[in-house]
Amino acid sequence: GEEKKVPVTIITGFLGAGKTTLLNQILTQDHGKRIAVINNEFADEIGIENAMVVEGPDGSVYEECYQLKNGCICCSVKDDLVNTLERIMERRDKFDYVLVETTGLADPGPVASLFWLDEGLCSVLTLDGIVTVVDAEHMEQHLDEKKEAGVVNECAQQLAFADRVLLNKVDLVTQERLVHLEQRIHEINAVAKIRRTHRSAVDIDFILGIGAFDADRAQALEE
Image (tube, rainbow, N blue to C red; front, side):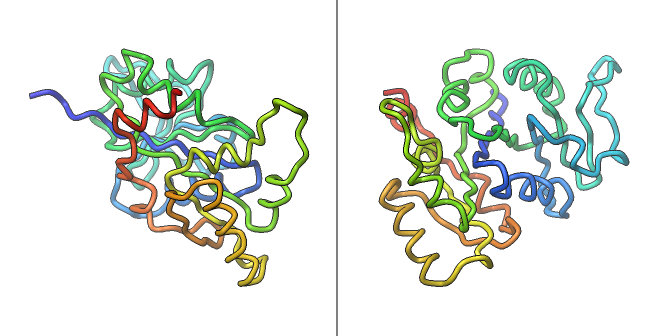
């Protein structure tokens, strides 16, 4: 039978919102899931000095790809995301999920569309969902930033694309404020599920296996 496609979750959010903390937990906690984490910016920040380098099927070493103690793999994007994904798919026996972390202000749209526009990728990978991490203390400031005409508000866009929102750093704001922030998120995106988090601590099943993307949803995003 055909091999099952590997589900991909995209993690997006502003710098400082807590994405790195979230990924650190995924890469270090004992959750029993084998996840390949693809990131752009912070291999140095994760304790990978004691991790094993991943070898290719022919014994060649994958630069910037490390196997961690809990069974996850961490890879840095060297040149381009598609190449990185194609390379790790040669070792698809090593993982069951892929998480792609987008840098800083990245609009998740173009990254998401890769998974149904690139034939090579969409034959082996399937987009499972988009998770946006927002910082409870600064989210409104980002949302209310005055933009020039025609310039998209990145924070609003990241929320609009999200299937799951982690409202992080909840210890820094009041209860009333959290309720208000959740209302604002729902004004932008009525269907995303929101989870309040402290130090990005969340049950991993909340962000994996979302199953949000079917053909209709993909169509809508492209338009």
